[in-house]
Length: 419
Length: 161
Image (cartoon, rainbow over all chains, first blue to last red; front, side, top):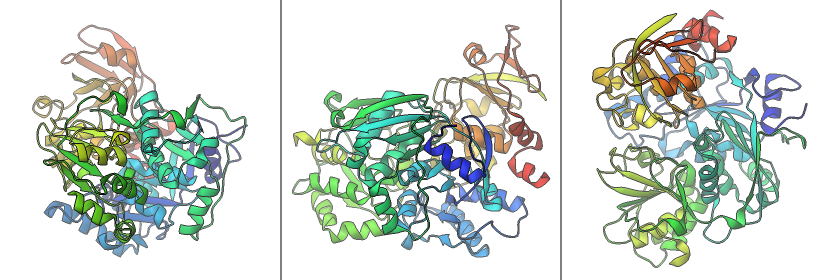
């Protein structure tokens, strides 16, 4: 029977020659991930299981990144609990803040995920690693605990939606605009329980940073995972970052899809998601006048080096509009250094932005940029739900780094093409 | 198992950030977190909710983050089950794994109004609106998930196994 990319990976990890959509399977895991919010609950559940050891100390990643550097005593206690667990069970891939960053920017950079892997993470944006040709999905803390104990997880094999990408993006359009456009088109539950598979000629025009950003937001369409066909760019990335063996799985040409969308990258406009759902999108040309109080450029969606460069290109020689707060956050320590070495930090600071250490902080209204009642932010993050970045009566507009930077300069949501 | 309670009614796409806002997640204690359940869309929820009560909602209930704290606080508030047209998949998994019953049933989710008495018979997969007398049939759990639910959650299921 013909299978999709995702189905082939799942079949191989379940020891089956084939699987079909809807089938319940138990699959072997290549990596289990948790962060400072989800891991404490997971570790408590793990301890209830009474296991003396984790299934494989090299296949667990613990990344305190949400409320770190510890924002208060309670956050510090949660991080301490994880740190002690990592020590007690000799978890190899525990990352202290000085060697870390935002989990989904960090793990690909550290080479912990490669093509063909099955990864679960107690964080919904674990779907990011689909950019590397892995099956990767967000789960809860109890699944994380069971995964750490047994090295397996149960899955319902997903059906898939195929996105055939053609053409190439125009200047100031990035992977963020493509994925916001797609979510706007199919809705926040448009891919519910399903895989989003990305392939086509246009793939070669998307950088790895574009693909990581797009796979990252598959969950915002309700998808179980987003996955990209593996090409030369993927292999070059994997070879540059990882010594782990990898397997390339390709969808059968006659695999069944619930829907197929053709996306001409050349037609995509800079895109903005209005409050309070990611599918509430408008092309930049239809945004109108929206004055803003804050800009956040960073997160697991857009905290990579190309995002830093896109922001710097706009901010170079310009000033942030008086009264607007601009927070720029690199995804990892490595990206932080690279941003500095390329002289981008000077550009940010001279423009009047603040440049922070890596943290998820403001994306989820945790710290480092929380919004007051009635305030509006343009953010390169992934969610604009009610209260997401602070007060329940604040507003978040999702956009690309280029749109966010242009908005920082103008004090309102602005098209970078017009600057 | 049978349950009965009054209904709370919500719209489509109730996300995990409103079920339990991230600003409180520097704690993972269910008793502390349950004080903030639903507060960004329904300030009165925690004062009015009683053991056995039911949540009825539209499409994609529980979308957003993977935080297991979301089904955890709903359960900690005493809610006996959530009836929705559809559920977001991570929320669905988490609810199964911690033993919070969910029922997918568009007709019931649409018809049930806030404050109405609703009873649910999980074995039969039947939902009854006690105010109108109408009954609805929900999708039953596949046997594998049923076994996890019957054990009381995934941890208990693995221990038994």
